[in-house]
Image (cartoon, rainbow, N blue to C red; front, side):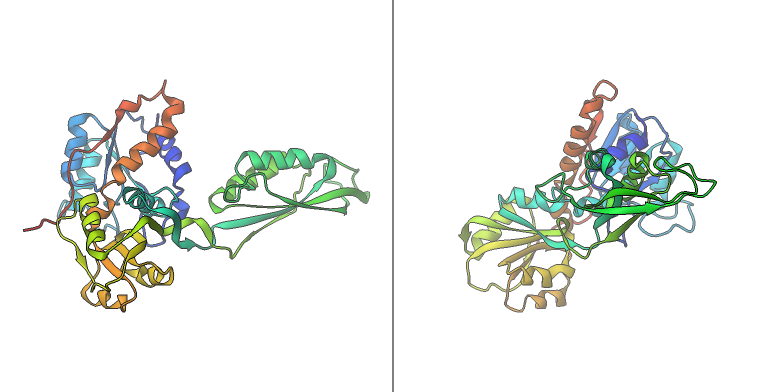
Length: 371
């Protein structure tokens, strides 16, 4: 399998379209047409990770964090980012980063945190906007089922736990082709009246080009009139962070002990205790201080995240307990998640690519140590 074939499968699960605008995701180093022998999964791509890939015969590194985050003006090995890029290129190793595309996935990084804490009633903390689109098109009645079926087959019309959702209304269409037209229905230079159905259905934003391509392939008209609009609805299955509930409420100290044990956190920082039971917990792996207000709005009793600054702890305002468990600690299970998702998608190609060739890095890339 090639780099593109492998990453395309991963993007079916976590489309890059849903990554945050500040992020740098996708193929960062390498040729998308390169044939892949083994894949190394890591949280960060450092020189030691590239060395590990070389040692284990891996020519594709799939990393959660992007090694190239800002533009490189020079590549002369003067810092660790440039050295990684140089070494990877020298050894024909491709590097792919998924980062916030996976952060925003319903079963992504934050779901993993919730699962480790066995939280129930999980919901997205910050549902993502402008990810739901609507197609509006007019179809001759006799072709309606064919067009709908083709669109449903590519995933259009799926809403939450429902699929094949659409709305139709009957009407009369008219058109007259000129001398250069080749009408499927009617004749050139003659006004033609046809019974048509207005078909409307919603679809996920990452399917935009696929929906248009499919529509134009299956619709009978030479010129297809359609419109696609972006809905203002928030997507309840895509977005940053999650909220869930413990099966039984715990006091604050017992909750912190549970968190420390679960995530093997050597140092936990937290805001002032509020002396109230903890039941509802909001989580956001990585740097999540920007979502403190969202956790409060969700009426969470406690918010788990990382990289909280001194003054940001004040934002708790006696409304919730902020718990900083460390950046690495909050995302440490991401490697296993990526392997699980990738193996599941590639399983259909088992005869082509041996799933044993998807390897989890043995290296702990956490740059923070505790004394």
